[in-house]
Each structure stands twice: as C-alpha cells, then as structure tokens.
Image (tube, rainbow, N blue to C red; front, side, top):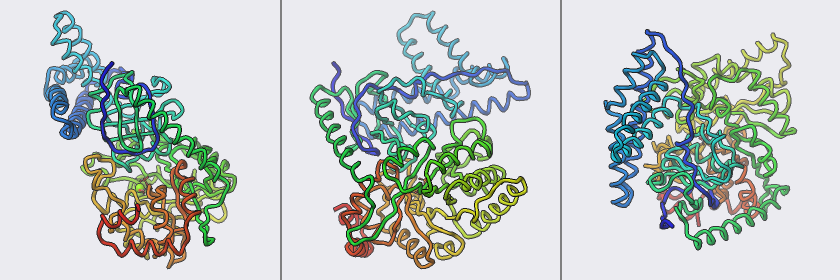
Length: 578
Ligand code: PEP
Ligand code: MG
C-alpha cells in the first residue's frame, strides 16, 4: 500500500470528500478532422501557435507553483515540466504539426493527432524504455495542446465515474458549469484562488473543494484514493484506514450540523430587536433554482447569466434566453429575480463569442461585462429583449456588472427603452412598469462615485469579490497572490461603507452579493453598516440566517463602528473573526 501524503492548498468549499481520483485533464478528447483551403493555412498555423503559447504559459505557471514544494518533489516536477517546455519550443513535434497543416491541408487538431500517432509508431518500433517514457510526455503535451485548441468543447461529463473526486491542473468556470454535482464527491486543482469563479461554483454546488494545491497531479493518477478536507484546505493522498475513519466521523458531524440548520428554513431572518434582513440566492445555472428555494431563499439576488453562454459554439438566441429566464421567474412564484446582464470576459469565457473579445494583456481590465455589451449592441439587445419578456411573468430586476460611471447607466437606460419599443412594435407584451435597473458596485471608481450613480440607479448591489480584486490590484483567481486577497482590507471596507451610505442617503435599496455575504463571521458588520439585503450561494443561507437571529442592530452598529475605526488589517481580522 502506498504511503499517506498530505498536500496543502486553499480551503474554498467546506466539507469532506473521500473517493477515487478522476483526472480531468485526461478526459478523452474528441479530435475533429476537416480539410482547410490553401489560403487558410496561415490562420490555422496561427491558431496552433496560439495553443502552443498558451500551453507554455500554463506550464510556466505550474512550474512557479512547484517551487513551493519540498525540494525533491520540486526537482521531480521541474525535470518533467522542463521536458514539456522543450517539447513546445520548436521541437520535432511542433514542426511536424506545422508541416502537416500546410502539406495535408487539415485543421491543427487533426494534424497534431496524426503527428503524435506517427511518433508513437516510430518509437514503438525501437523498443526502448527511455523512448517509451518520452512518448508518455509527448502524449501529455499533445493532450494539453488539444485542450487549448478546443477550449470549451470538451464534454467530459459522460466520462466521469460516479463517486469520483475530480483532480485537475486548473478547473475553469466553464468546466464547473458542466459538472453534475450529484455524480462527484468533490474537486481539487493545482491552480485557482479563494474567490475566483471556480471556487464560487464549488460552494454553489456544495462540493468539498481545495484549490491551489501544488504537486497534486504528480502524486495521483486515475483511481488513486484521496480525502479532501475543504475546511482545513488539505488533501490526503492514499489515506490510511485511520485517516479515512477520522474523516468519516467529520463527514457525519458536518452532515448532522447541516440537518439541524434545515430547521431554520421557514423562520424569518430577523434580528433580536426586530429588524428584518432579506436573504437571497446567487445562481449560476437555472437548474440551481430549486435548491435555492429549498434552502429558504427569499428570491434571487444575483443570476450570473454568463454561464448560459458557456460550453457552446453559438450564442443563445432571444427565444432560448427568454424560455430559460421565464422558467426561473415562474419558478420563483412572485419572489424577486435579479438578472445580471452578461458579465463575460476575464476568466469567464465563451467561445460562442468568437472574436468579440480580442487578446488582452490584462483580461480583468479589458473588454468585459457592460463594456463588452455596449460595444456589441446586438448581443446586449437580444439579452435585454429576453429579460423584458420574462419580466411579464413575475418581479424582475436588471443588474448591470462592472459599471464605472453614470454615462454607462444612461446608455443602458436608452437601450432598454429602444428594445422595449421594438418589442412593442413586434406585438409582444411588456411588463408595466419596466423592471428597475440597478448597478453592481464592484469597481473602486463606482464606489467613490456612488452618490452620482445613486441618482441614475434604482438599486445597488455591492460585488465585494471584484471590489476587493480591483481595490487591491490582486487577481482573485490567482493562487500565487491568494494571501494578499483580503476583503477585510480597510480600503475595501471603506468603499463598502461609502457605497452603503450613498444608497441610504439617496433612499435606494442596497444589497451585497459578493462572497462576503455568505460568511457568517461578517454578518454583524454588514448589518451594522446598514445593509439589509444579502445574496449568497444557497448552501450559505441557513448559517447566515442563524447568525442574524442571534444579533441586534444596536450591537451590530457598535461592532461596525469599532471596525471602521481600525486601520490595521490584523486588528480588523481579529475583531471581525473573534
Ligand atoms: C462580485 O464581483 O462580487 C460579484 C458578485 O460578481 P462576480 O463574482 O460574478 O464577479
Ligand atoms: Mg463581479
């Protein structure tokens, strides 16, 4: 039996999972094959070269991560990764693929597969152990290139055996959207930060998860038994019988606590001195709605519509979007549905967008979210039309992501009027009045301009995830700087306070829908600032409700005042998490 080994990572989603590994990156890829015209060879070669560049970037990131491992593991990883880098840098493999694209006039994916098959054949005839191990590396590099060529068309849902723990170098938000939470026990990856969208999805799916665990793939293969501790951020590879027994006990305890929390479902979120707090759900996929209602959500505070655009080759048309949204609005039976317009870009990508988003050195600062929508009126108007039509079936609020100034809100308002008129001409029924339009406050500029934005907005929703990312200049999904990602930084708290006060002054509703909302240790502070609506992933609702029921507004206000008087990050953490 192999030795037990513990790896450390970031605890991103609580709970314990025990099971055999399924390596996501090894999911069988379908390799499309088609011929190309002679004048398309240059473009196809460029597409292949982009995949090579992307692969090199990924390996280098894994390599820097490997530096944090104990020296012999780091050395082993380095040798392996250096071999992969060499293979991607003008090697026979790369040259061979380029030649095949030009000579055979076929797509890059097929050219790559043919070259790998050819190399495997010639190595096999040499019957040499060293070459056989090289072939393993070539296949691994080939898989990486294929994934980067195909990016979003990998359907691995069929291949994951039930009860597995998914292990990957990196799991993208689009990957998580494909995962059936009932089919797997948990997921772990070498990359990823605490409040990146992958982590958010893990919490929403209620799957124990640890991200940013260096050396993970070095130590396990398909079928290896592992235990994932999503509370401590630990992964135990080949757990002993004792370790498994200990984790099973913790699993039972965790399950029991969850059962107890369920009894709160029908009780209101009301403080001991009678103030009511609205607790709503953040959703990524329409199928999550039932779970949110089961967890006692009073509505949807954030529906991240961009997930409807992922893992597909074409954009959903108005009818498809309308049907999905109407289904959700009707499913809410009169409870509010906050639909955020498309927040694609950054780490949330969709190949259906084609070239709408070009290469960007800083994708988080680039063409994304509302900026993309205002530049691509057709995509935006289609979505607005679907939202307006769905709003006939129940209360809907429109929420705009990544707003930085009043002019953008004005432009959206004009667009909404235009789309409404167009629908009217088409004979569609419209909601009367049209849905309220609110803005996400998630860019420091928006927080600082909150007074002006309040004049043109019907409500605010504070996106503390991006607000933290942009205030501190820390990529929220990069595990290398995860220790610096701190939503409790006094600068972030000040911006939240400033925004809340601006909303209260203008008498517009303000909610918070970032991950802070689901952390019961922060509830008293947020309530103390004056926030009366929190939106979070459904599994967090019960615990936050229990916390609210044990609070008073008076104490919370004092608590918030004490915290706002602190300028030291460590002091804030101590008081907040006491
Ligand atoms: C946020 O930024 O806090 C937020 C809620 O939006 P998202 O996590 O989708 O960027
Ligand atoms: Mg955001």
